[in-house]
Amino acid sequence: MGSKEMIAMLLAGGQGSRLGVLTSDVAKPAVAFGGKYRIIDFPLSNCINSGIDTVGVLTQYQPLALNSHIGIGTPWDLDRNNGGVSVLPPYEKSDNSEWYTGTANAIYQNLNYMEGYDPEYVLILSGDHIYKMDYEAMLDFHKQNQSDVTLAVLPVPMEEASRFGIVITDENHRISEFEEKPEHPRSNLASMGIYIFTWSVLKEALIALKDQSNCDFGKHIIPYCHKDGKRIFAYEFNGYWKDVGTLGSYWEANMELIDLIPEFNLYEEFWKIYTKQDKIEPQYIGSNANVSRAIIGAGDMIDGEVTGSVLGAGVIVEEGAVVKDSIIMKNTRICKGAYIEKSVIAEDCVIGEETKIGVGEFAESKLNSKVYAFDLAVVGEGSVIPAKVTIGKNTAIRGVTTDEDYPGAQLESGGYIIKAGEGE
Image 1 (cartoon, rainbow, N blue to C red):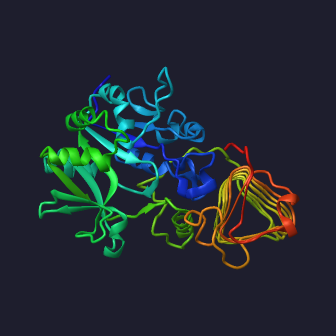
Image 2: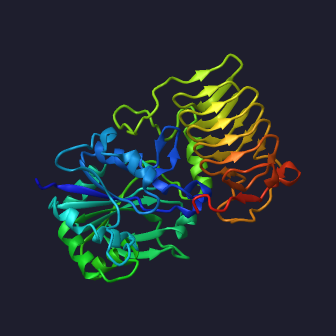
């Protein structure tokens, strides 16, 4: 195989537990975003647009949707003979399957894959951020500084700095110290979890720390390189970057796409975001429909009202139904007269006639108040909700539900219905 200057390793294993029922059956990077995309389309498209044609995608948790989405990489022009995109699940070990225990452990298990390309540099990415970035500019910076490791960093507001891994740099951008979620941060440069390593340095560190349990880049590999006196630099990124790690940030990032001139433009010609497009039928908007400030997917049939919302492909909104400030994923049907507000409804769901979701007073979630917050109602993939029930805010539903599940025809705010055995 021809050697490559830089290959990318994309960590897409995340279970994304803070996305609740949205990630019960699907890995976080495969969650829909902006109608026709999935979260992983962003880092993959950044690779293409940066001229990187060899990407190893490290999957782990519920990889089926991700694997079928990526396939052999055709949408990203990554179906190549030398390089291209490869999905790399954990190796089956004879005694029991060896799961990746930490981000660096996952990369270590794929040492042979990387060796095969004999790269000069390796780019490490995670699959759960929405951003556009030219990795080639970061590589130029890495070379100019004769750096061993370069971290992409993002200036964050000082009051938010304690939520991140923070780096302290000198006047030449060289990193002198790291602070993991510091209580009193001394800098506002947050690590984005995007690293360029000189291959020999990465390899040496991975081998040295191969027995470290839960071996992680931020916690172990970078500090090891630092202690070893390696040259570590911070590359400052100032573009749009969104961590869609919580339902609130996920919902917000989708809603921002609807603004007239979105801060994050999915439709720029020179920096395209590529995705796998299944449906080719046009959408149909009926004569009584009313659609405003919305992204409507291919093959959608809208006979009701849709405002301030993002709809995937093949969504049906029947007459008299209202969808407001919500995310509806592909092939979901909203039946006649239903009312949906500030909700996230996953793929392949059916919402019964005249059912109301996302209404009523605030109440804290009884299932998990950290996950189900932001006043959102969340319905997991393949769920069915019967007709004429009322569902409150901060609620979670997953599975095929029937009238019996809704005493008094309602699920009040903060309540949840998770059907046992639904792929648990």
